[in-house]
View 1 (tube, rainbow, N blue to C red):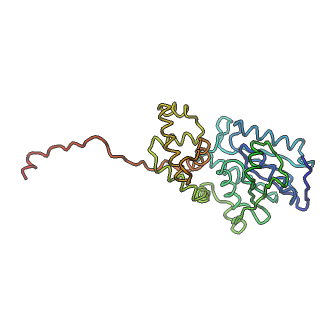
View 2 (spheres, rainbow, N blue to C red; view 1 turned 90 degrees about the vertical axis):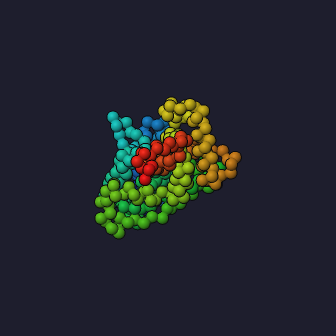
View 3 (tube, rainbow, N blue to C red; view 1 turned 45 degrees about the vertical axis):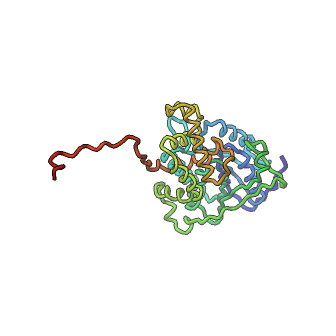
Length: 320
């Protein structure tokens, strides 16, 4: 790769980046930041350490930081999994306990970095949207005006070429841009907020989730039967149609029939034309975080097909 021009006016800056299966998000952000500030350490936040895509992405990034250097300059790499652990195995953030554990980890990390007087640059473009929301919530409590929240904007053509780390460093003509996300660092104004509990923050990231996205998911869920919602939840968790059939004890044909209804509802909610192609990845991407943060909505009762037989009134009542 070409040598990255680095500016060394601001020592002690750290990049904290969320990671999914796209390792180039981290290097795109880091390359852009190194033209502005000195980054001495990169901290990767990721879920599911045992997932093959995560492992592959981490492997690509570790190779970029061989011998504690990046682009020929000293830069450490630290990797932190998020979620709850059972028997030393990290689980993906799919329930309240794992989300709470992830938020506690991020809050503790930011508290540690700020206690050591580091300035933090957080890139929230990688991985699940839920991770970005958790980092955003923690940033509002611990950041000051030296810190920054970033989004990596990548044109569709470059995104396709760089998929899964095929392109780890972008050229100027690739059009990658680092966009600063406006942030109100409330903790810098009200220090008491930095001691807020995880429970008091759980409502915060729910409110921060894009309202339009939330409304679309709610619209679809509200129009589905109980069985269709169960199928949608299973698709959002990454299960295959056969796995769903086995789990719900229904036929594969029934799964496909429910899937067609779900896709039809999604096309309407998202404003797609009737012929627009949707797949299982769409359901996982759009509904996973929503379903992880929302309990099952109230079930809609359906009129029974059986006739209601009226019991005859007692004789003494009929004679009144």
